[in-house]
Length: 503
Ligand SMILES: N[C@@H](Cc1ccccc1)C(=O)O
Image 1 (cartoon, rainbow, N blue to C red):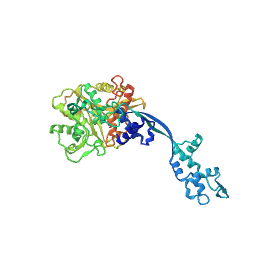
Image 2: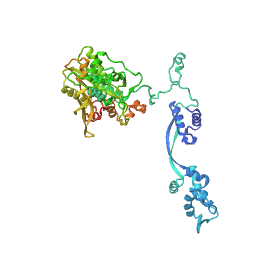
Image 3: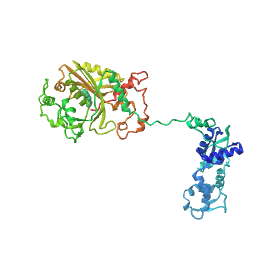
Image 4: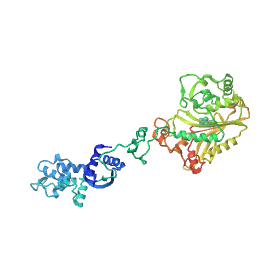
């Protein structure tokens, strides 16, 4: 509280009982209000707002007050030179003519009278002192941009029940000292300000990707899936490609598509036995396959990459499952993958892949289609179609499409398939075990749910931390279409229809 101003107010009230208008103190409004609010909180004063419309001079008006009106300046300059007058020459001529101050003699201006009274300047002085001229004159001055109307806030103040000249210290806390000394009996306690806004708590906030990830995880857990350990970004080409029966010449392995690691230079290879079997199936086939018939290179298999899909982890998990003695399993993961993409509003060089794998005896393509329908239904996407496609590691393979009612077309939302025998049998999985797999990106549904249309606002160095902090903790309207009041199935379907896998 500004002590000086408070003292002035109290002093004045002591002598006068009330202040009709604090404008008389010519003090800044905000400081005045703060001082009054503080005194009022102690019941020392009572105050109310006054709002007045006042006329004040514009910058131009101020200039005219100082150097004379435009017309007076024209009058004074005529017969010498109007050149130095600037815009005043233009503005003032008309009025100087109208006032009968000047006349035109051929092409030159001449004075018509000897002396003038600058009425405009006089009026400006009046306005400044609060002496307001008649409304026609006011309107005229306003039109000439000399004066403007503004609001002035001031206050009416009177003594309050606790009025005194002395501002007593107010206690904010009941302390042990106050209690022990007995001072609490006479102490003056500061009132709680229940209308004060609390301090914004410092703390972390969940990123939208984390929130949507949590929703996907929930669906997977509900459906009996176990989470795969995806906590490593670097993979060998063996696990990222070879074990998946991706030929060593496949375009996806090109530098343009995949980030290679230069140091360390080499990864460890898996067991000699498994490596042999994988090399064998690439070179010569087996399990009713004719293979790719090229010389398999261990060096190529040992190269290190930033994993291009989490299917590398699924593959290692399936291998482990085979080693430990096969039991039916359902695995999922949601984690980061890297691809050497051209960056644009919907593509980054890294994104998160949602991936699922189901391994069981004698699964069919029908089982996969049925499962996909149930899986996507949990997210509110009910209208699915499947289109045959090609993946080196699945056969058959299906792109998953959903009808986008906004775009009025079928849009790809995921990729899926049944892993090939060339991939599964070298692992030692029983022959009648079939494995479903599918994947989609986490970014696309998140962008749709949170209304973000540029991926760079979601991930990377351009992310606005405030956007993350201010995001709702819970989206009541946009959950996966399961709870009451959840996103309309149609909207959810549309949202997910946009969630295309980046492949
Ligand atoms: N790995 C695939 C997704 C997929 C996983 C498993 C089976 C089929 C497809 C991708 O990156 O798009």
